[in-house]
Length: 370
Image 1 (spheres, helix red, strand yellow):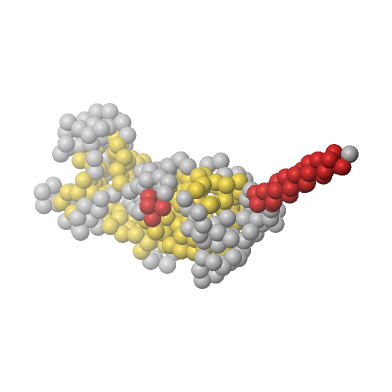
Image 2 (image 1 turned 180 degrees about the vertical axis):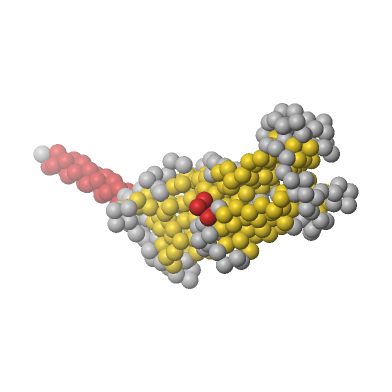
């Protein structure tokens, strides 16, 4: 009987010891509460007082971690070479301290690591609460916008971003100001148009469209001394072509050969003009089909209540085939990225924290090992 009792006591002792060991193991591997330590913040959608934003925070809370080094960028590249004036805009709220920084990069290759990230153009470091508007390089055809958050050992409110936009300056449909399909006076004509109804308060540009209606050798259209003024008669824009070819944008529509070019009255005299002028010259290039429009640069009329354009024009039409049109265009934004962050479906985020050998993507889930 005593031997049986001793055996039972031994079994109970072993069972108790096993339970204690398991309990210790459980405590050792328990997730527990998220600590405020090494790079445990990441970019996520956050409810900021009823409005969804993107923030670099520890899951569900308002704070960033320490030694964070994490960025996000548009998953699909955008082409900044289309149209003109590519611009980045975004709203930010960055409480931050001296050992934190939000830096924005423009990358020509996908920033999948810190090397490709920092090889991009540094667009600046941001703090405080504000709206940013940044001009972008219009030569990059595969552009990624990356927002990098770095923190030191101080923990504070995480950075918040919203309303990220990348847009280029597109243009409205053409507004026809003048059309001519017959000869102007052989001596040329001084043209003047009040375009206030369409141009006042806008960014605008003018287009000079010359077409030979699918034919060839229809003489020419020459222009000179283009001046745009406002209600104070201040010059908003002027071009007399004396400094050389201004390099105005051109679009060839139906024609694939005809173009606008810089000519001068010494070699090719044009009545009403002196020195250099701009022309689509079907007489000089008699075998070309012309259907080409050249555009002034964009002109800022946002502070003007009246806008007028003046220029010298000499359009000579042979056999009814040479037509000239003056068009006006207003600037409209063409959005390549327009994000208010209801989700992160169109964005990729990367974590490369430097504080510990284990990096937390979401507390309780180990993301990567150094």
